[in-house]
Each structure stands twice: as structure tokens, then as C-alpha cells.
Image (cartoon, rainbow, N blue to C red; front, side, top):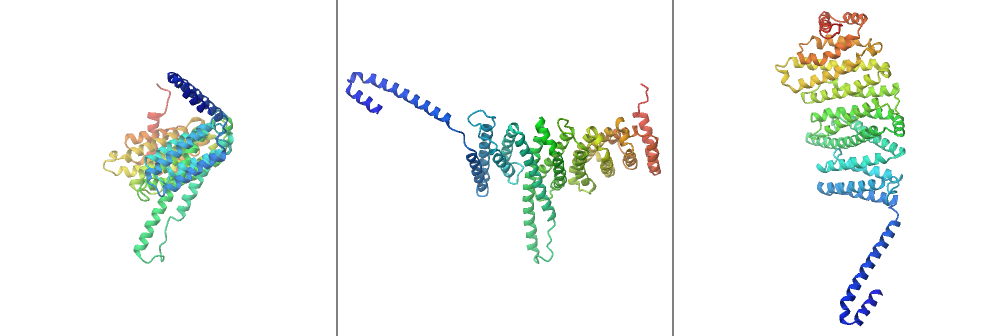
Length: 500
């Protein structure tokens, strides 16, 4: 109507007024457009944010599209889809984590949180770098964006949501361990009498290995995700409310880490030697063990809101128990370097137990000493094998053996502190006996002696005549000669006599 009226007035005017009317019309149109824009903004400010149901349906649709496309689309397109969905998830979390501020303050509500967490879990588990479906560089992108989403969730999580995150992480570890235990129970394929044709039997064996490798990849991906989330949650659970939640779940955390360390340390060693095909899943398996040990370390050193009991320390020691049996098995040259690394990983929680929780460990010192003996026995056997080599110093295994001996020596040094005498004295003779009969009788060079003797000297320093008599009583003639020489070297080079 306004346009028709203006046009009628323009026609009725003289041609001389045509330019002035056009200018007037342009001003009128500009004013009208500005008014319409303001009306749109006012209406937009009154719009409610997307509902919980809308957000949930959006995420479910995106995940369904991605899952269906992964089997029928090229890996490059799947990579693009996965990255786009992760970007969408990051936008949702960033818009909904404002604690009541902004137009999207209700986007990530209490009911949407589980949906977001489920979507994130599925994306990282199936399309991340540690999952069963490898996207190359795209998997790393999904992982990095997933970490950003998870950090945002942890930052804005309420105590209830923090507990849900913790339980979800533990569920991932539990499911992965169950899958691996099922695979271990079907580890041997009995073909006797089932297939008469040899070629058919070989074909079935090949298919079995392929299926098993794929299932292992999925289990490793789930454990990799659960351990990474658990590590982040324990690291950031420093507030009072979050510490109380961690304290309530501490037994479950240590128990799950113990089981996962036992299972995935074996897989780590197997994959390191090319156990199943050409898969590189041993990297993720090693990461599961490493992060689990780091979580145990944070729990043992945490003094804010977490009050450990003797049962908790026993569970922490059980994590070491799950790793040590690998040292008692004979390994090939390809796997030994991974076993050496595993020994150094196991020494980390043992050192922290002695430093921070020795009083709670007092009832389990027998088992603790047994693990030390197993480690020392492994190092002795390693040096005995290297002593027969023509030029052992050129071997990488020689350097790794020194690192193992140094890690064990640090544990014994802390065990030999003066304030621990009453707790550990009755266990020290077993360790010194093992050294005198084993490593002390070998032709060790200066670097080998320098790696192990600081711990041995620390144990000698807390011995009384009672312990010395017990050691000599159980040594043979060769062992007694070695121990006498060890005592002489200790008094000569290590013991403080008061003279400067």
C-alpha cells in the first residue's frame, strides 16, 4: 500500500521533481528496512533455545548418519563427517556450559548431558585414533576435538554430572576388560575332527585371527578412552565436593585399573612382538597401562579429601601384582625391551607406596618384598645373559638393564630410610641374600654396580647384628665371600664414619 501511494504521487508530479522523489523513496525504503531488522531482532530475542528433545534428536541423527556412512562411504568422507559432528558437539557444549548466561544457557541441561556424553563416547570410541575404525590423521583430529569437549564437560560439571562422568569412564574400562577376557577364553581354536580338509582348516584359522584382531582393536579403543577420561577426572577432582566423590569410588577405580593393567600389559607385550598380524594396537595398550599407573600415583599422593585405608593400599599393591608375573615368563629378544619398560612402570607405584603410604602398607610388606625379589631376580638373569655376550655394551638391552636396576634401587633406597627400620627390618635379609647369591656373584662392570648398589647400601645401613647373622646363616660359601666383600666396600666407600 505504501509503495502504491508513493508510485501514484511520483506519476502525478512534474518531471522536474522526479529526482527529488527518488531520493525521498530511497530514504523511506532504508528507514523501513531498518525497522524490519529491529523487529526481527526483538522476535529473535524472545525465542527459546532448542529443547532437550531437539538437541537429543539432532545428536542421535548425526551419529546414526555417521555410523551408516562408515560402512558404505570412503574413509575420507567418513573422516569429514566425523569431524563435522564433533564440531557440532563442541558448539553445543560451548553454548550450553555458560551456567545460566546467554541465549543457549539451557541447551546443555541435566537431561541433555547424558546424551552429549553418549555421543562423545561413541564418536571417540569408533572414530578416534584409539578406536577400532582407523581414520588416519582424521582419527587424531577427532581425538583432539573430543578432548576439548570433555574438558568443557568437566569444567562445567555439577557434582552429579562429575559422578556420571566417573562412572562412564569406569564402565568403558569394565566393558573392555570383559571383551578381552572373552577373547582370552576362546584363545585356542580346536580344529580336531571339525574340518577334515587342511586348506579349509587354514582358512578358518586366518578368519579367526582377523576377527580376533578387530575385536581386540575395539576393546583397546574402549579401554584407551576410559583410561584417558579417568586420568583427567582424577587429576581435576581437587575440589571438596569432587574429592568426596572420588573417595566414594576409590576402591572401584583401583580394582578396574588392576584388572585392565593385567590384561592390557599382556596385550602390550604380545603386540610388541607382532602377536596378531601387523596391527599397532600395542601403542594404545601401553597407553592404557601408563595412564592407569599415573592414576594410582595421583591417588596415593592425593591428600585433599581422600583418606586412604589399608584396603585401598592393598588394591594399589594389587596393580603391581598384576604386572609382575610377566617378568617370570621367558621372552624372546623382540619382547624383552617391552618387558624392561614394564618393570620400570611397575616401580613407579611401588616407590610412591614406600614414600607416602608405608604405614598403611605394613601388613602387605611381605607381598611387596616378594615383588622386589621377582624384579631383582629378573635383573640378575638379564645380566647373567649379557655377561656371556662378547660386547654387551653395544646392545640396547644393556642400557635398558641399567635403567631397570636404577628404578629398583630407588625403591630400595626409600625402603632403607631410618624411620622405616621397625617396619621393614625383618624383610631386608631376603633382599640382601638375593643380591649376594645373584648379582653380587656376577662380573659386573662399574655402571652396573653403580646402578644397583645405592639401594643395596641403603638396606645394609638399617641392618642390625640380628639381620647380618640371619643373612650369613643362609648363604653358601661363595655367597658369604661376596657379602663380606660387599660389607667391606660399604664401610670403605659409603658408610659415614664421622671423619671429614
